[in-house]
Amino acid sequence: MVHGLGSFFGVNRVAIWRHPGSAWSVPVAPLHAQVRQDGTVSEGPWVISPDVAWVDGGDVLVLDLRPPYRGLPWRLSRSAAAIWECIAEGMTLTQIEDEFAALDDLDVPDQIRSFLDDLAGRGYIALRDPS
Amino acid sequence: MTAQPFALAESSELAHALVARVLRDHGIRALFLKGPVATAQGLLPQRVSSDVDVLCDPSQMRQAEGVFDGLGWLRYHGGNSDMVAIGMHATTFVIPGWPCTVDIHNHFPGLLAPAAEAFAMLWSRRELVTLAHREVPAPSPADHFAVIAVHALRNADGAPPLISQPTLRESWARLEEAHRSQVPHYARSVGALEPLRSVLIDLGGDPGPVDQRFAAELTDWNAVRERPGDSAVLWASRWRRTAWRDRPELVFRAFWDISMDRAQRPEQWALASRRERVSGRIRRSARGIRQLPRAAWALARRARKSE
Image 1 (cartoon, chains in turn yellow, blue):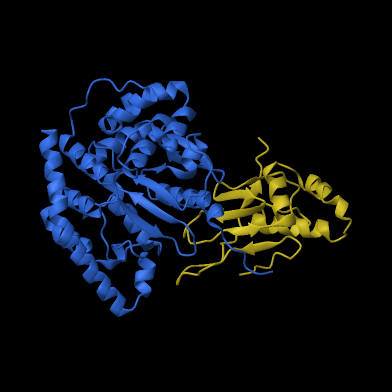
Image 2: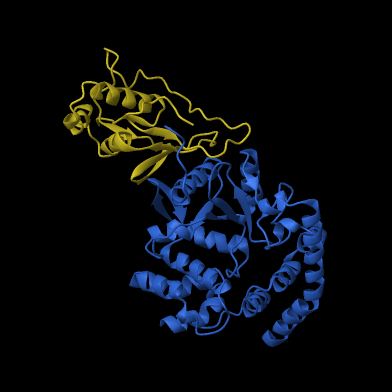
């Protein structure tokens, strides 16, 4: 099962067996709390939602714990796993982009923003409360 | 990209977090035992765990089973199986798509106090352990040692010396001194002191005065321990704990339910041919009938010795 988060990030939904009646898709929350006026993702930093469990063993596996509890973990590998770790460490967007600056690819910042936007939209991350 | 394999080693902590969340959201009190929980508490070394062990508030066991049924999680021994009714200590669920299983315990063998009493004690001393970056409730380290110890004894050969079991020795060594000193008192409170008496002495602990409560339960425990792996003794002790109205189901499960036969796993039995299942049932029934007198004698002998 492959979801369209881009091959650059190596994001896969782990799928062995789909039980009849189970839902693959994760509810998508509104993005407005996470985005700037110009439509791009906020500068951050973010916190990982308490509705998400995750383990890091090279790849990162992310599990949505919300009802209906039928989701299977998402596998984040390579760059996606690295960005997730950056988020967990409390980095801002600029800091995350700096982490990938060595790649010297004009598309990378856009892909990072797109990935963060997707995570925020799924409710997996939220802006850290400044207080 | 293709779908990635979902390894057992990756699944365990996530499954703990998922089960904890489901139970919490439904207001069900439960403690997570053994496996990665014990590892996180420093009681056991890191190793791959194939299941999630949960001790549920016995008064909420039916509710928990119903919640899991409602989520489409599958009872390992079949949709109609009722492990609680026949005195089994746990109901095993398979979460579709997950490589690990979930064992939800209504009591824990070796904790001889009434299940509700033992759970209340463990719950009152619980702590939160972080797995997969989420908190799950677990017994206190001293309580957890007692749980691990009775579990190790139940599955061990009955021959002494008990101290030779590396699991127990290592777990004891990993306990902080303050927690070690709590073990006898805590074990007494859940009825595990007598099962663990010789172990505690071997480990250098002081179990204190004999706990004379739970004599009948201790008789069953010792009978099972004397004959490790003897399923007839296990079934006979379940018979003693099962209400008359549930005994027909127990007889059915003991002699006829092929999914409980250890020659194959339940899912293998489900795929077996009709002929294989019938011959397996006949073998199981014949074995059960053959072993029954010996099991009854073993329990009776144990009872006489403990009087």
